[in-house]
Image 1 (cartoon, one colour):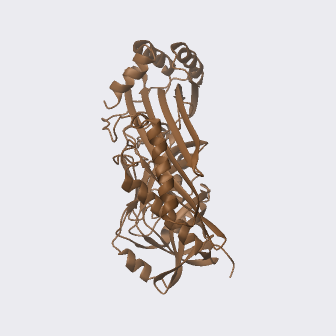
Image 2 (cartoon, helix red, strand yellow):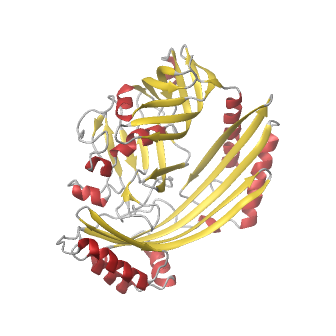
Amino acid sequence: MTGLSTTDDLFFGKAGLERARVEGLVDNAMAGADDGELFLEYRQSESLTFDDGQLKNASYDTLQGFGLRTVADEATGYAHASSLDENAIKRASETVRAVSAGYAGSICEPPSGTNHSLYVEDNPLEAMDFDAKVKLLQEIDSFTRDADDRVRQVSVNLSGQWQAVQIIRAGGYRAGDVRPLVRLNVSVVLEQDGKMESGGYGTGGRASYDSYVDVECWQHAVGEALRQASVNLDALPAPAGEVPVVLGAGWPGILLHEAIGHGLEGDFNRKETSAFAGLMGKRIASPGVTVIDDGTMMDRRGSLSIDDEGTPTQSTTLIEDGILTGYLHDRLNARLMGTRSTGNGRRESYAHSPIPRMTNTIMLSGDDDPDDIIASVDKGIYAVSFGGGQVDITSGKFVFSCTEAYEVEGGQIGRPLKGATLIGNGPDVLTRVSRIGNNMELDPGIGTCGKDGQGVPVGVGQPTMLIDNLTVGGTAV
């Protein structure tokens, strides 16, 4: 099974754990329980930031530890430690057994299927030496400053991570995974006529640094950051009101992730706190709207060969032609709802218990030409990129700020706008989708999702689409 050889060497070789004894402790912890696992983790990470013409920050961290979980009905016992030590695992085993004391559960079957590697196991941190990384950042900084005489500030960040995990369940079931993750970010500040505006672009994925330190890649990132800042220099305050909104392809899918995706996670629906609870099989979106969550895409930031419970990831159809067809499940919520895990049990680290989370959440393409969609709008807004946003899961209400947006007048893209925020309701907004482009794009690999105090890397994607009527917050007119 993918990842087992490498993680066996790491945890039972270099860390000195004795596999048979560890498996015995796991069996003991799971006695009488319904589910549970031992999660072993080793992670290396680094981040280098070149800011204001000099290396401002360079950090390197190593994290290791374990989390041991026992589940009895809805109750969870969880213990973790920052050491890969047999005595610590033994103490944790004795602690988590308290949750199943007097309980006569039957341990669930382990995950089925074979996981296939979706990324290389190479450690990206070892692909370049420190001096080469600093030289690269310096080169990007110089190139950016030379590209536009309006540049006043440049910040470039290069970060990488190498995570190895192994999941051990009762009865000796084991699954392992080795996960690289890298990211490159460029942000700039331009000044023109005493006015300053910023722009930024990031890209990344589960790969080595090679693809992202390529000249063509980082020069594209610089060009996009400069373009966005330049657009913002010419932007006018966005008017407030209810208007048709065209969402661009790719990164605007973050609105779909937040406003819709979280509401389709199993825990919220089992507890009936989601606005989508009880609507399985019902129409919740316009015809033509199909949304999937796909954790099996090669090298993507949100992809996983296996989730953090050892279940192989999959492509799960959440909405098909406007009809709600699925939720995202970890093992606990799937068992309590009488279904199977979709491979969406994720955790930030060994110190966190797994919960249902998205991977790569995507709206599939429709039939419309994107230019025709724009041409159909007499007066509205074209939103190309988003910054921060938030959603209330229970009500479905959301607010998103646009980092790049334009007015649409007479079917033509007009002046850039700043200060635009999109305000709406998740279950309602999907019913207002009237046209879907044939140009689905994935985001460049920058998403991080927060839930219950845990952050995990995710991906999004969508085609250009038209929402007939949406509240835009801006300047009153």
